[in-house]
Length: 266
Length: 77
Image 1 (cartoon, rainbow over the protein chains, first blue to last red):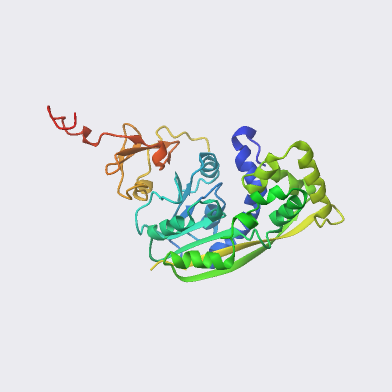
Image 2 (spheres, rainbow over the protein chains, first blue to last red):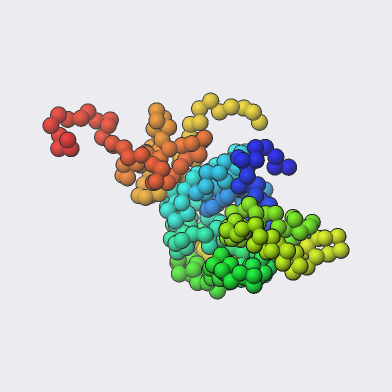
């Protein structure tokens, strides 16, 4: 289905197959949990290809959604694919938002937090632009635990090459656990902070369906794949194929967990 | 689908949702240069394909007093 110019759509298409397709299943569960009244003004921080924004448009009856991302390639995909009059996009930095104080009902973010150097600044900024009584919320993968798509990848990669640990978000992103997420929100002055797990099944048609996105997507595992020479990458691919639980028709069924956190602005 | 936007001018509703990322102060729309101007930061943020680029690294430094007539012999020369 994503066919146009491969060069133009390359990064976004690869992201969509790598993580976008799973995030699309997490997003509606997340927004339902936030439980905002219709007519709210939303800010989606690190909107990427528009996964969370499209879920808000489809299920939350927003007055408006503003998507912010630092990548112009992702924004081009998002703005081209979402032509809803309630949505607009801005290029910007999550740690220095270009929005006025108290100007939104909710600031949300999907799969972004662990990529930001200053996480406290990002949460402070999201809290600043939301009016009192409004909601700040986000979700990240449970890299260290039940995000089996990546967990299996790095367990196998690290067994073959101890250097792979430098890319493993399960190790590099200790923020992506329930305790640290709650602390981060509370430290930023948010009230009624709650954390929950969101679990979904990830079904791959074949090993190639699992493996291909690692060769082109955005994120730590694709970056590690790109750092390997052909032989090392083939070895990793063979080991993974052995290790992944594969059904009679070649299908692979894994579990995916995201941690979601929300808090109320005072 | 294929309707062209002859002028990618900024949507008023969007402008209301934007502030300078450095000062958090208001922005004014410079239609001539297609830029969002932060008077406090003396920066002009570009708008590309209708998308405001709110990154100081992409902004242009601007003279804010350009509406007023330059006074001869003023201090800033």
